[in-house]
Every structure is written in C-alpha cells, then in structure tokens.
Image (cartoon, rainbow, N blue to C red; front, side):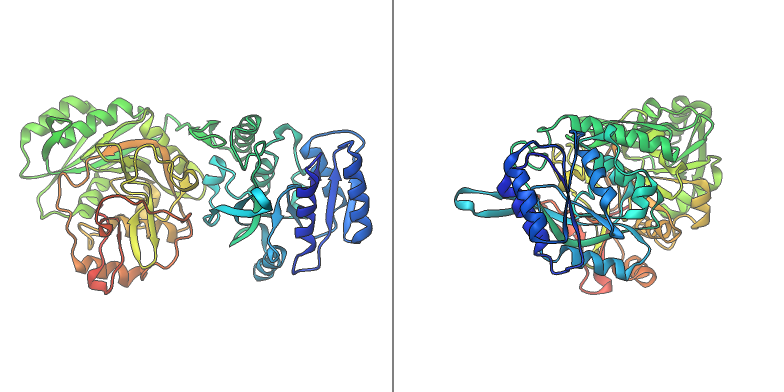
Length: 540
C-alpha cells in the first residue's frame, strides 16, 4: 500500500479492512512516500506496534506512486502481492477467496476480482454502488481499458522478473504492470466476486475519470509500450471515453483479403431512396476498405437480374469474382462456395445489406487476425436509425442473443462495453473475418444450418480450436438487417445446434448487464427455450 498524505480516517479504514481479513496469513507493507505529515507518522508508528504483520517503510524522498510501490515491493515476503490504495476497502473474505482460487489453480500468476465503489454520505452512512461484474480474462479489453483493476493479485516472482512498477507510467502504473505480467503469465484467473471497494472522492478517478487527466495519457503510453513488446503493428490513442484506449492496427500491404457477399439481388428503400443492396454494399466497401489487396466475391442467385452483375463489374472491376448459385437458399453453402472461389489470405463474410461507415474498414477488421490466438473478428453494426444491432453475441442462461440490441447510438454500454474492443462469445456472420487457414480448419459454415445459428456454430468452432473472437468497436457499419431474407427459423436448426454444443450456461466474456431495455419483444433479443423445439437465435 503506497501512502501519501491520505485522509487519516479513510486510511485507517483501509488498514482495518486488512486486519479484519478472515485469512490471517498476510503482511501489510505501508510505504510512506515522504508525506511529511506528523499525524500520519504517529499513526504509522501506532499501527506497526499494534500488529506485527504491519510493516512500515519511510522513503527519504517523494518519488511518486510507482517508486513508493516499489519500496513496499522490495520488503514483500509473500508468494503473491496484492495491490491496494490507501483509502479503499477489502471485503473480509478477499484474501481467503484469492487464496482458495490459487489453491484451485496453482499455475495462476495473476488473479483479479469484481469490484464496487463506496462513498460516505451524511451521518457517515456508507453507500455501495456501481458494481462491476467483470468478464473472464479478456486481453483485448485490457488493452482498451484497465478493466481488471481491483482486486489485483500477482505472483511476486513474476512482478520482480518484469521489473516491478515503472514510474514513466505513474497514474496508470497498475495498468502497465498488469500488461507486462500477463504477457508472461501462465494463467490469468478471474474470481467472480466483489472483493474490493473503491472509494469515491472528488479527486479520485473512481469519482470522475476526468479528475486526473494525466492518467489517460499514461494509460495510452503503457498500451503503446505493450504493443511494441508483443510485436503488434499498431498505435494507441485516447479512446472515445475518458481513460479508454483505442488501438489502430496496420494490415501489411501483401495480405490479400477476400470479401464474400452472398446476394439475391434484392432492393429496398434506404433513407428514402430505393437501391439494390449489394451495389450499395460493394460501393461503400471499396470506398472505405483502406486496403488495396482486395477481391470481392459475390455469390449470386441464378434468378437475379443480370443487369446487377453488369453494374457490379463497373463498380469493382478486376477485383470482382462472380459465383453463380442455383439451389434453394442456404446461406452457409453460399459462403462456403464463395470461400472455395476466393484466393485471399483472409476471408471476410459480409451480408449484402451492409453499408460500411468507418474508414480503413477492411484493414482494421482483418489486422488482429495476424496476432497469435485471435481466431475471428466482427464489427459494430447498427440499424438504419443508428441504434445497436450487433454488440457481439452472448451465449448464456440457456439462450443466444445479440448484446445491447436496440441500445441508442450514444449509449456506452455496461462499463463502456460498446466503446471498446473486447473478446466476445461470438459474432454475427453478417460481418466476420477469419484467416483462410482457420476457415478451412473448422470446415467453414455448417450447411446443415442454412438460415440460422450458422454464425453461432461458427463461433463455437473457432473457440474450440483455441481462437479468441474480437468485437471491434471502431469498425462500424450499418446493417439493414433481414431486408433480403426471411427472419424465421426452423426448429430443426435449433435442435442441430443444441445437439452439437448443448445449451449455454455462462458466457465467459459476459460483463453484466448486457441487455438493453427497449420497446420490442424480448424474444427478439434473447431466445431462451422451454424445449429444444422452441429455440431461436438472431439470423446470420
């Protein structure tokens, strides 16, 4: 616990919360960063005399939070170290819960818990609020946001191996340290219990992310340094929300990308004008791709107006590959045939009723796939009115759903989930990217799921083969959903999915709550079956 001129009452509360632990095998190291405060000095002396497990180190100069933390770390004797601010609180079972998690997984090198905030109101009444129920280990989210935060528990030998705290990142020193530790950690463990209470005050980042603006820039710098260490060709910048980080990756020019678009040539009225959907999709794709090594594979129905093909040739030129499809509708088969006709190192599945909104769309969507462990990526899709259509899939509570479907365009989501890149259980095949090798390895889309659940099944297969799935907040497109196909589903498709994967119980990447209260039938957002025959899911 680094200590610098704390409010004495809050500081003593913090120490008391450690002394009240149900697990007694701990030491508390208080590193005073030359506070030059006589009342604090007296309390430090009293506490050291009161409990032999409390140790005090007094720094000769004021070095900042990282140097103070390193001074405490140098005296630590435990196998694990716990990071704690000098005015926050541990729950009484915090250390016991972490010790149990370590016993259950001896390879754990970093553990973190859920947390909530605390403030003291009139009459010294405590109020607990803003509980953060966190996802399991989500390395992409950690780059965007120090979501692990409190309570953080790190193997001491690994902290020493990476060099401890780095004062260059003061203000986001914990974020930097956790990035460096998790780069080497054998196992990262989430303990899904609230074990830490973060005190809110006007000057703390708990109260306002804008209270300490230097912490934002320190976080960006920490992520930039992390990208360089792990070999990601990209740059970090401030995100759209305070203290979040946006990463812009670069896709090498030599990587060939094939975008596969199944279509029946349907048209519809968009923003007051009638247009052929596939033509709008291809135009917007080429205008905003941000990548030259691109081919567009259009799988078209035999009965389609041939004039549409002529217009596609004029729009896409020699980038266009046409594949005729002359069988009853099967979205999965059309995508697979498009894959077989393609030549890209990376393949993008794209519905024909998509309009690309963000610049460098293809580059940003595909670049993460070159990183070890990333199996599939998906985009942030919105309806025509700007509300959320796709915020990633959620597989939980015996159902499948689109996270945040129907949320307003300005809604940030639970702890900014709609504003940051993050791991998800799955993404919609309306816009998804995989490497060619991964698509072939998992056998593409299941043709036994011609209309629904094919993207859910695809996501399960990607994860089964060890691939993480990323939802990318800044890769944006409008999805004029189901303008070109029937939204209905068949019970046989549901039964096929359940027979293969079972019914989902808990989503490891779910940060609750993921639902959005909006004026629509809840069944359109999450289908929770009473029987297998009743199962449904969002269409691909």
